[in-house]
Image 1 (tube, rainbow, N blue to C red):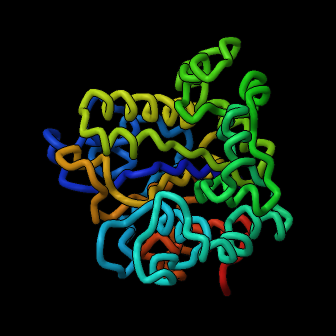
Image 2: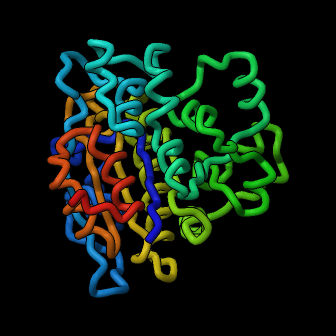
Length: 310
């Protein structure tokens, strides 16, 4: 069993009021059901294939609004970064968190255990130029890759189908100076992620446009962003044998679930699970007494190492 983790920036579980919460749009096939807002509309190709949902605390015992730097560090290391700093911090990780990220991030720990990993997002050359000139202005995910020796994928990987664009379809790459990058359907992006799970034990895809849409307070933008995500997830779930991959969907803090405000929320975030491995990782989460962002990385590691904790 491999794991596909879809990290959604800025997605909480809030009031299911369609006037303020675009996640409950009944035109979406997958997202509302995985997040507990409707009955499943997507096919389940195996009787053992299930989906479950947990609500996780993103506040981590600290007052104020959760931020990406500390929230993502907690999510991808299992360490309560907000507690370490005594405050929420973001969007980038605080320099004091670098030692934690260097030794505890999920890429490092899985590679040390002999598992193969892949960060599926592709990056344009301008990102690598930025990384060289401002190495402290990296997100938790890109810094974790840098510290663990996981290569970041490039335009050539996207062109050859070995990566997925941050906007899912690749439409934005022409403006970045890559008119040759083809625009694909969101369902094809989901199928690409399925193919990557055949090569790697752990695959991560990061979707930051949800957070951007939440800050915009623009319902049309939010609906478009979620439709792309919904179609990508549908493409993955309907791929052959997708139920044999554990799909993990989670976030770092709330935002898009309440477009009546442009700031982050203190709502819980989802930990949505889909696939034949749901029951086993649910047992691991129960053993860990997982109730906040810090439970995700330890649970995935134990799952992939086939460690029951006994």
